[in-house]
Image 1 (cartoon, helix red, strand yellow):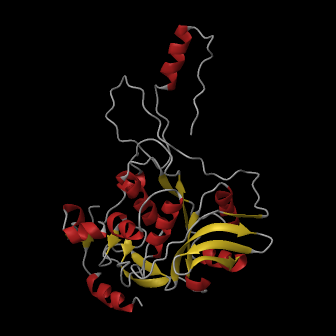
Image 2 (spheres, helix red, strand yellow):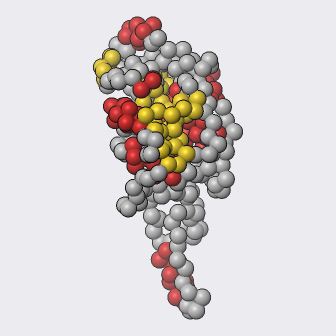
Image 3 (tube, helix red, strand yellow):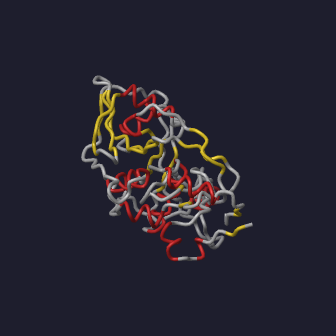
Length: 314
């Protein structure tokens, strides 16, 4: 269903394009002297501890105490071993069709955001927050390639992280997305046990298919694509029944054989994304490195002809 777009992009890709391109602080004891308390506070705030993947834009005065941004430790416990079963209660799959026949990634993200309490629809996510490359200027690590409304190819994890963080910025939420790519499927069950759904890359109907070279994008990088590529949300597992519970944007809430799903998950590069936090988390948004790395406009920016949509041709 993507062949017509491929013929279009093959002609366009020859252009050479230049792209614009919770920690806890232990305080001094109440019995400490005022001088000691002052000394401890000075040491605590004399240096900022960087948060991996996140940085703060601030023009705070030097004498102001910085506000620590929201972070969530999602690292798996060393002693963790999945057992039994766990299914996220009340997770409702959002279906991509008919509006987004090629928009499984944006739809999967939307279903997770809705589960976490954010009131947003799939078209808003796809059109207003997802970086897009209609003419194949870049590869799927940098933007969604094609159009999710028609016969687009898709995107990889980094783009969904960018999309989520751009959305959180729009609602001034301290939440953020984080990649878990490379994590074994059974280790992703830890996130389920902690109440966090996981966006994962698979194939349609778990078809055994492999990514292949398609063309060279406008920025000179090779676009590699699996023609059955699909994005879903892992919402549960049952080791006794040997199944996983999945919100499939093409089918709804379904179960798949664990071994088959694990095999396809591996073929697709063990790509996974989790959202840190939910709509109840209080605080202000902190600009992430993922947001700063966005080089392509959104579909809405392209339609509006805004400056953010300009790509200079070299």
